Image 1 (tube, rainbow, N blue to C red):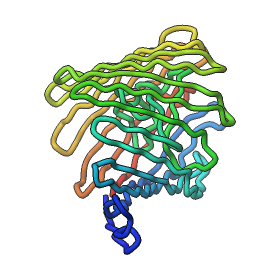
Image 2: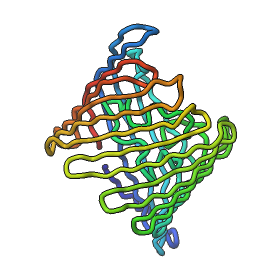
Image 3: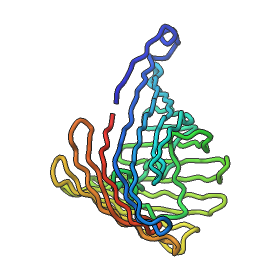
Length: 300
């Protein structure tokens, strides 16, 4: 992440405030995607994305940190071999001191931010199209992106040693009002946590998760249930480091709703150094389509 320090006369003259810091970060990717769909048959298309997040931070004399950020992004149109840009997105803000952090505006909820446990883990493929929660239905997961006109929220998180607790409230704004609470704890090499939520239109839900590592093998499992489901959903993912540069991943997501297919996929990541990686994966999506992708991703 590249950083530019801005210390203007106005900032220096602001009582009780330190110089602001502006940082730019994100990633780019490009490659090919194959999908076998009953509606339009087999199709191979180009994939591309460029994401730039701009973050401004400053700190008061007594150590309270303030942050604001927004995002710009370009994407391909899925399966159409065309692309377009979006942004700037709506801004998100944060205030933090010690173990407490308050996020306001265009910010992630508890599940999306993974405050209490790894809900989305070991994404498969260049386009992150499969993971352990891909076939879960009825769980609110909304976060920070490049869009404008988004539903705003307030989220508070407190961390004390190995313990973390988080709560979020999202008022109605074109989409349903909902709230989430959760907690997590690090038990040495294993982390466990839960999140409970309630949506005014779709009912309540809960998810528990466990993730950790044993040598070169990292793993995560989740179990969840919601009023929108016919049964409990299960998910799991693993990542194995073949070498310092190459990893193999696998994920499975068992849906708790009869109309949604299970997701399963395998993939790989190979680092070329300098933040550049080769990525690919193949498997079945939650809609039953067979999908595969391959390409290059670079972070900055």
